[in-house]
Every structure is written in C-alpha cells, then in structure tokens.
Length: 138
Image 1 (cartoon, helix red, strand yellow):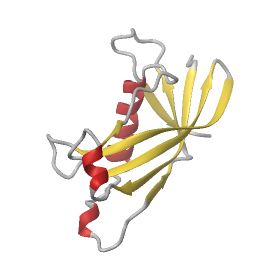
Image 2: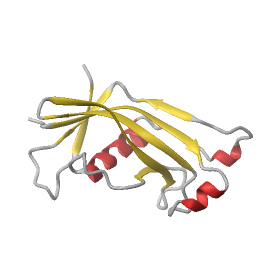
Image 3: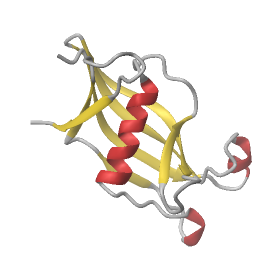
C-alpha cells in the first residue's frame, strides 16, 4: 500500500537570461521553472502545490537534462527519490528534449502537461532504497 501519491500536473520552463544565469549557483543552468503537483498523503489530497527547479545539462551524457530543486522540499517525503523518478520519466520515458535557449532567436517558454501519471512511494523498501514508482492514472 502506498501512503504517498504525487500527481504532477505540469512543468513550466523559461530560459535564464543574462544576469539571471549568474544569480544561480549552478552556472550550467540554462532554464528555470516550476513543477506543479497535487499530493495525496494517507488519503488526504492537497492540491495546487509547486516547487522551483533549474534544468541542468547532465555532465556524463551530453544532450540529456536533469531537473534540480532550487531548495529543499520538506513537504515531500523522500524528495530526492521522487525527483530522480520524475527525471527518468520525463527524459528517458517521454524523451523530452529541451535544447539550448540561445539557439533560438525568440525567448522560449516551455510547458509540459503531465496529467496522465502519478508517482507513489514504495513502502516495501527500507529508507536507504526507498523510491517512487510511476503509473498512469486510470
């Protein structure tokens, strides 16, 4: 049984421009955005939540991306595991490709709708190996 389910609704991204890039600790960040979600804990639904992210290129695999939070998120138990699962879903399963903002002559704003999926915390594992699995919503 899963006592935490996270329903991501959408991911919005906008390019970091000029001084915004230097304002972030992550110099390789080219995009900033928000993940909007609902969370169900012990059967109680909390709606219209969000957290800020930076989109960073992966160092190991060029042309792949990773969402990184701009701060810790205490509301979501095992937040790092959730973000790892969300990254895998977005960039490995959906194969979302963002690209570099400087390659476009326009300021790009990106929005990815995620209404067909939810993530549930694996309660069968220990805290060290606990992770989130994702499923399509019925």
